[in-house]
Length: 430
Image (tube, rainbow, N blue to C red; front, top):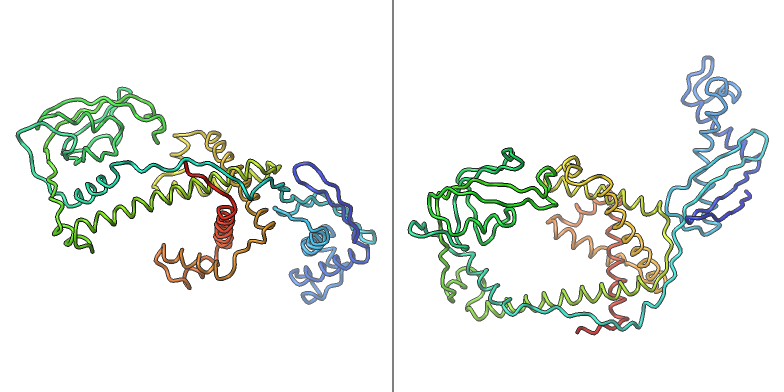
């Protein structure tokens, strides 16, 4: 087998392959024998008809196609191995010249992994703004704990307050029409923790029991229903009931009844530990990001568009799955955003993801960073605990989706590389 290699733009190599006529005939004869086993030819048992008879029934081109389908994977695999090509996509056969008695000529194209040139990635000194914990963080944690055990009492002698729970009727209108599913009777809303349209809950404050009134709001520009996005709306409302929250006293008894702690002080100490751990986690995440951003800016990599497009297609499938999990359809997403807008965003994310992955893989290769079987097993165990599935069942399920296993392995490698970068660079938290 003779090969001629020609490098082309976009990390493509063109490979011209010549297979000796003797081997090409062997591929053809073997293909004819295989096809003979599946063709009913009068006067012959399956698989026993001679080549010229098989040719009459299925045609030379069908036999040649069978021969190529069977031989090409091995041929291309040898080319890739001999030239140490790092391919990132299925090889593409551009053309072939297959005449029995002559050398078989094949022209194929291979898409290679982009070359990555690393700049400085060790010994860097980077300044990062440290996370500043809000001064009232502990008090908010305490208040949140106490609020879990609040009771309510019905109020009849005053107007609504921002901390109340109101039970009310409402009916919405936009663009001169009633809003579909925009009405309810005796709807209960916690005014302090509302997920309604911005400005809605605020206008329910300072209202009297039994009062009829209107609320005017504007739907967010990114609202999922396109015809309502950015549109003004009016809601006719009536307060049916006002409930005030009655907060319990924070006492040792309340703590003992609802936690494993014995005193208020122990509870607060635990809360403070979580607040401090949260700061440490944020600082670590921001530091890792700052280091990696610097490593990426120091590196050079020329990524072909086809690689980005395939990654974008993968992100699109993930996006559709997330929509389904949230109860939305792809058609609803297209109503809120155009296909071109969605794909533009996904391709930007895809370019970033591909670039980051290539740089991480290059660092792993340079530093001989690998994921051991034990480390991969630990990652699987972590996943099984997250989903409350035993490890054996988890492995069995994942073995049916190799792509997920590969993604999990890549995630484990990413974490090891990020840890390496954290250990070999210095961050000054300002």
